[in-house]
Amino acid sequence: MKIKEPSEAYLAKAARLSAKESERMLSRMTGKLPRRLEKEKLTQLEALAIQLELEDEMLKDWRERMEEIRTNNITALPASEE
Image 1 (cartoon, helix red, strand yellow):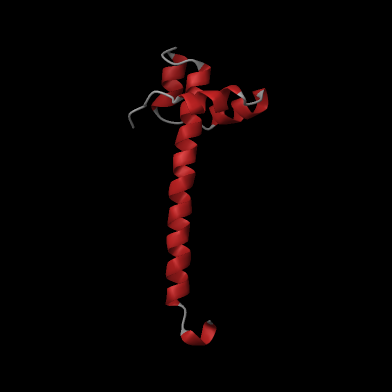
Image 2 (cartoon, rainbow, N blue to C red):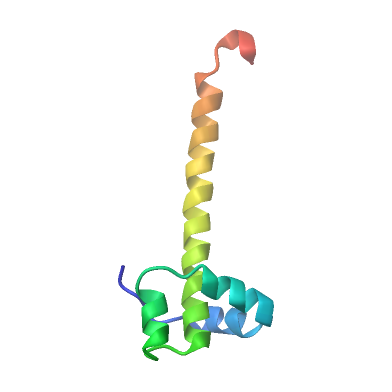
């Protein structure tokens, strides 16, 4: 996973997080992101912005997969169950 630079929109979102929300976001970080934060290659705000963007992308992908599953389940139902 290549870590990209945080966008301005996500930096703004990260800046608005409460301390508790920030702590939860930091606890969910995986891969290179926490290591870069520990080595001070990223600020906490930058790391939070990247994490927010990653989670938004993952949520979008999950929603698309769930929509496919729902569509497949509806089309797979026998006519008597509809």
